[in-house]
Image (cartoon, rainbow, N blue to C red; front, top):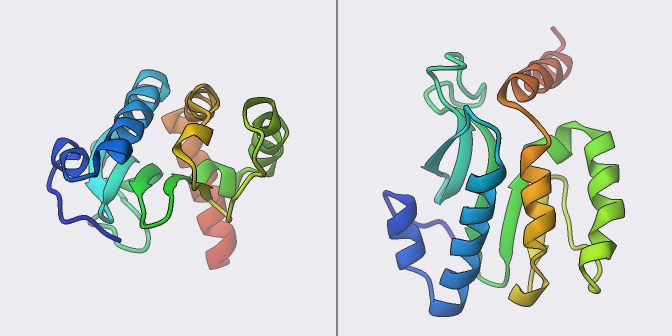
Length: 155
């Protein structure tokens, strides 16, 4: 479910209390760990962490008016989600995350290509998400994105 909130604060304020606490903690963890240069915005109805146009003027190839997405967090109907495009673009990072996850959580990893789902709020591994947030710099993300984009578009 996409939020109509205009700011991250408005988004979090609109959530039920239990989700509010988890999302505030996720937000704080990401902001504390994400490399300099990424900006926090509302994107696709979620809290997004993006490469701003001031750093990467081309923007997102699907809609160049939008900044280049990197991470997002959202309170969905049945789970809290962390979306991390670097996991999608980097098989080594996916392997690292998948092998670290059981050290933090007893539940099975529930994950799509770039989406990590947490049905139980107590299962969110904040420390691991913080470490994941720190793994890719803005420059490295742009390089990975360009390589992936050029490969997929046949350039």
